[in-house]
Length: 319
Ligand code: GDP
Ligand code: CA
Image (cartoon, rainbow, N blue to C red; front, side, top):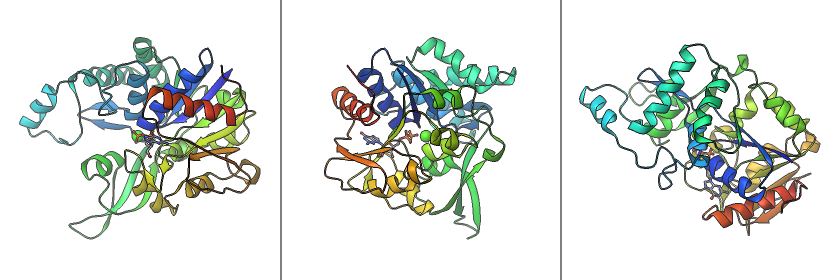
């Protein structure tokens, strides 16, 4: 059995953990958002790839949900002592080694997909970890500059982490996406998968960015397996995180139904065959098999049960 999961960072990583537990022995491919990637202090950082890699490789700080367990922050403090901007991004000492290796390989000419595979050699995440694209795509956010009152585009990370998404956004721009191609293996994985799952990741800046790479949306629509999405919105709010700050910017209601309709039915130019919403979160999405199941990934058992429900909706058997 081959399962493909489209994923962002924390929500994607947790869900993937559930998929591996629900379908032991299955081949799992994770197609991961790289629109959050950023260059800081000369280092190329891929937050969502790293979150998935550390989570599945048992190196994640579980409480924070990102970065390395047992992290120290000496380099960050030293950079701050120099006044070296930016100081708002958490770069731990252990984590820095990953960025150093990645940057060195990228500078030597290896594509991100090869670099990711090399890093995964150490972490053995148990899934095939594919960046959505080898080309650079960076999500920027158009905000109103508080000083000038004029629109200004800032990197998504600056908006998300430095400003805690508090600046009102008027749009998201995926810089570079028009020239991007799906990463090696992405389209093949989608077309041969027995099931395609959308993790409960941010529908705009995680899943939306992956789907924005020319060719990926069409490949999902053409997939031979069923396509099942899991709502990141429960009771009208995003769990952990600020996805509810992103949806209104693209004109989508912050509800499980709103996101389901945004993805739409495969039978009607959309993407989904089935959509999982939280128990007691009513939703109707025309043409889509909507199922209400517990969506909280609070424990390994609950996360595995959620993944099993997703695979059941995809029509593939789990042990
Ligand atoms: P990021 O890249 O680290 O922001 O992570 P993702 O885009 O993968 O996931 C963020 C989304 O995960 C948020 O929109 C949350 O609502 C969602 N999320 C987090 N925990 C849970 C959970 O336990 N259940 C569900 N259904 N969604 C969750
Ligand atoms: Ca992310």
